[in-house]
Amino acid sequence: MPAAPPIAPIDVRRRRLLFRATHRGTHENDLLIGGYVAARIAGMDEAAMDALEEVMELPDADLAEWLTGRQPVPDWADSPMLRDMVAAARDHATRS
Image (cartoon, rainbow, N blue to C red):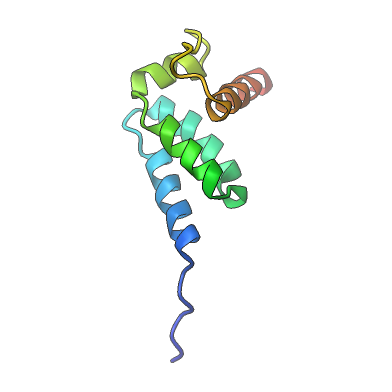
């Protein structure tokens, strides 16, 4: 039986990020962050994944507050990636 082709390092990173995004510890963040990442991870380059990892280092409780719009994103946490995630969460909420 022929060996399976090796998995590219960027694909390994994408898989790890997707797993991490969908296993945050709270159901709300699993859906909000995991849904965002699942829809976009295939098209992310290294820089986008770096930005995503920075956002995913933020505390879950804070992320939930910001992504649901219960609290505004403070200046110290603001980034293009987080703004995009907030916009996607709000768009999803208006379609539901």
